[in-house]
Length: 272
Image (cartoon, rainbow, N blue to C red; front, side, top):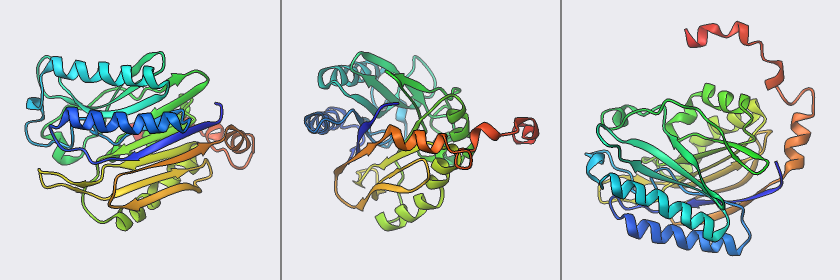
């Protein structure tokens, strides 16, 4: 990877207010581009808002496709990598919770949440792939909120070459300080154990559906040390520089990079 400036956004996303949410996103993207960021990370479901009741009715298939097109166009125009969350409507059946990944050269792909929280399982379908994304010489992976509690996901993405794990959240309940303490219990381990950068952000504010999101942003280096953080109740964008040299030093150190020394033949019980 090369040195990378990431803008992580705490954004208020009202359910169903798609155009308003997209316009707000575009404002953040313009600011990030003006400040020479290379990538902008938005929270899970930042475009559609966090919807549990009848998410398949939030818009139709055409509306879902047009959202993807606008995000890709936004990334192309601003010449930045954008990761933004939406309800992905299908031809039939339950929708996915999806993160759209667009870059200056077009759509990199869609990441569909593979591990749903118990309330989400009643309304969404699970994705089936743990794929990494490539932009130039950068390889990265995505985990959505609840997925960060499954260490195997981070390891699987790291084994596929991920240098950064982006972890957007739509995590309600609690206050900002409490949410930060929660993240500091597990996210540093995802970075440290796998020798990767981790960047996470949450939605912020109370929505008309009654969910209250504590604003939280956390960026960690491959040793699990804090690079940047934010906890509060306001929309904000935090810039963090991820330096290639830091990753190289960690992965070049025989005692700090554990992935190459795994004995996978001993771990069969994990997937049995």
